[in-house]
Image (cartoon, rainbow, N blue to C red; front, side, top):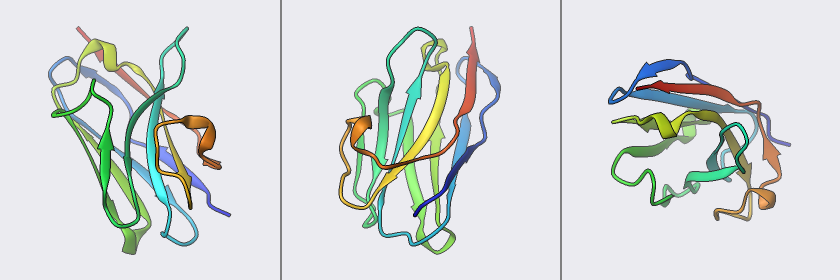
Length: 120
């Protein structure tokens, strides 16, 4: 069993930066992904990092967002730079021991989201 809590969301101006944190309980040998969901839109893949630190990003955030993890602290980070109004969403972290792709339905563990609002 894995429990996840995402924190760090807040209101920020366009062009600004935020770092989201996903704190997890249990073992660290799982992939952790970030997804986001804006009002009226479907849940969208943002980034994923495996236990061995392999990463993958959505095209919309490549070059602006960086996912990293500290396995000793059971924590995953999402550094978001050059934020745009279209990045506004609730951001969730999710984990799975076997899956590390972009399909949110494949992840077995989810935490409550954190709101990121980017003003223009």
